Length: 250
Ligand code: NDP
Image (tube, rainbow, N blue to C red; front, side):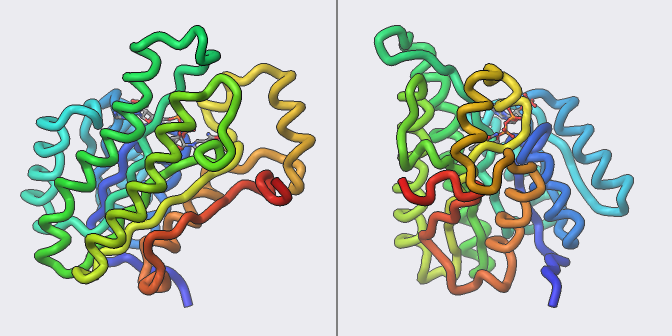
């Protein structure tokens, strides 16, 4: 048995790099048509190009997930293009790390806007077509720090914890429409986001990961792919931790 998503249309946010790019490509490889949204349009276009080169179908959008008008336009254009929307992966995310005492209003607002409001806007806009179809999958990319907290990440950890509560609420509200909503909590994954960590922090983190290494974007994408598939038809409101064992024993 393999996961196949032929006939499905997916929107992936933050699809221009890292985990979002891997998710977009994995969904396309399984047969889904993919709308790739990234803040920088050329990044989204590059992902769409990679999908098309491999024989898949994709369209690219550039813009901010926290912009309500932009999000509504993206979903409208996706519907015009493919007449349906089955899957939304709310992956776009940023960090603005600093200790709480030094955290500026802008640091707090930027992180909450992108990480939390973006997921709210994309989910809300996608629910209508999903309800019409009586089939939908929403996957929110949270983080293990949404469970544990993390020094220097009050804004980021709060946004990721809130995404888990948001996920459970969407699952409760939408279960009767056959729309599932789940969250994935990655541990430390090799992307531009973690490249920014100091060597000291990376070494400390590595010592605490039972599998002894950072994860790859593909290892998150496989979990997302499963949650978007028919194999996950009875899973909703859940948090899927993919962290190499980082949180085991905490
Ligand atoms: P990257 O920084 O590598 O990529 C982030 C992507 O999100 C980019 O494509 C970026 O666009 C896009 N993006 C950022 N802000 C916006 C916005 N306002 N509107 C639209 N797109 C936006 O991040 P990762 O791949 O590492 O992370 C992806 C998700 O996984 C995030 O939610 C992150 O919090 C989460 N995560 C990551 C972990 C890790 O270890 N890497 C661990 C736990 C969770 P552009 O390319 O145009 O700049």
